[in-house]
Image 1: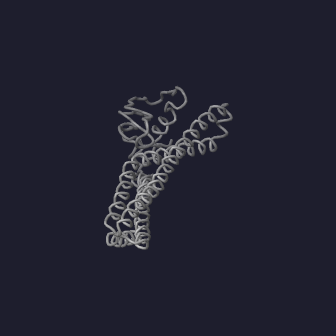
Image 2 (image 1 turned 45 degrees about the horizontal axis):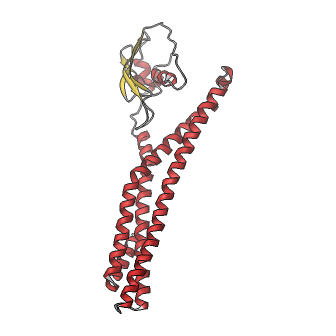
Image 3 (image 1 turned 90 degrees about the horizontal axis):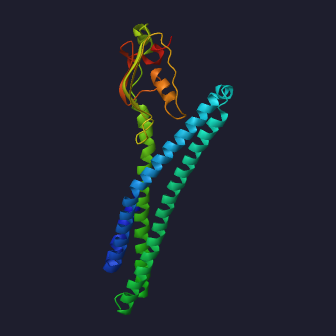
Length: 272
């Protein structure tokens, strides 16, 4: 609010001193606004990748620490370390990309301010030679132009920062927007006893814009049958197991326990 008022006041004084100075300052502000608008999608994409990469790395690390006994028992230390190293490199890469884009925006800010100062000096020198401005008026007009551009640039930077902070709020909204699980008491009363598991067109991914871990998976496991999930690391075996247990909810499709959607049972309703 204060920056906006100061920018308007500086623009009014600048227009009174010299319309040419006002035009130069307005052109500089418009150019910077265009640059920020053009760079915002890239900044947003970099910020999203940084959030997702950090969440993946942190989640993998915590999962490994919590299951360290099983990891050591099955001799999976090297594999888990390799997976974590890959996720850590991805996180560092996303951080560096976001920092490079931020540095380029700061460079554009400084460059435009310096270019504006040179343009104002040139225009002001011509007007002084033509006796349309005095030296004192030139200095005052330059001061108002710098104030206007500085405030407008700061407003644009703050707008972008607020929009990027909204990404964190969006992640929180995803958590708060999840539908509540079925009450355990209700699940215990309605839980079937046969044990048939069925998947109907199940698709799952860990975030919007992320690659699909499972895509249109359908299978049927009769009661009493033993099933082994095999495949390379990262192929979705753990994710599929968590979906079958009701710990993860798929983006599409449904999981049925004896014909009853697992979402109605909740995790407590699938316990033996």
